[in-house]
Length: 279
Image (cartoon, rainbow, N blue to C red; front, side):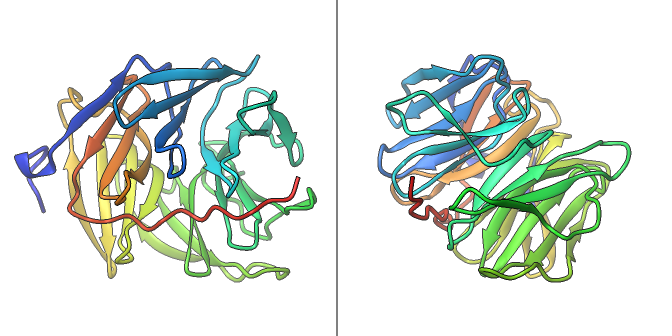
């Protein structure tokens, strides 16, 4: 286990002043990070460190984000109970059904967009909605989730965070088929897991809103790789994403720190699936 915030981690603050940002994703075409704000802001951060608010959605409270092959953003907005599709040229349009608390979105290779509907933190009422490229949708046949949160699709499985368990589950997914039986990937203790990311060696990274931690799961073994007990550098990290031309840095967005931070975790990220979606 590494010491908290040791020099080898090479932490860098990329940007400050984000309005309680939660979601973050890497855009390999525009070569920027995208993030959302509590008042409906859509932020971009380029590799030179320039932070720009590109759009603001009225009544929005933006959380997780995903990208398709065209570069359009899919943004979870519990303020308006919807997922927005934003093509960067026109006003965002609603994508899929009414969702009470859409928290995070992740694409599968077939173009299905999986969206966590968090539910209550006290009682397990969370679920996951699958939105097909044709606009139809369904709720996955899963037991109620203990506050459904971050998602990641990897090698035929949908991984999903149960923040109030706390832990991570996975379920087998296939085009045109129902889901399989959920499997518990890992249980955690005395923390609130939020975001997920995979590296290209198959290790799973789990960011925790509390208490300012990032865990790495490799072959069933958990390793605490970041533990900012001071809250000075990383404060309530929510979502994470590998970024850069080589995907060799990990971006963490700090909800309460109003910042984006870059960390060297000595790994290369697994490219995020960005399927082509017909309009």
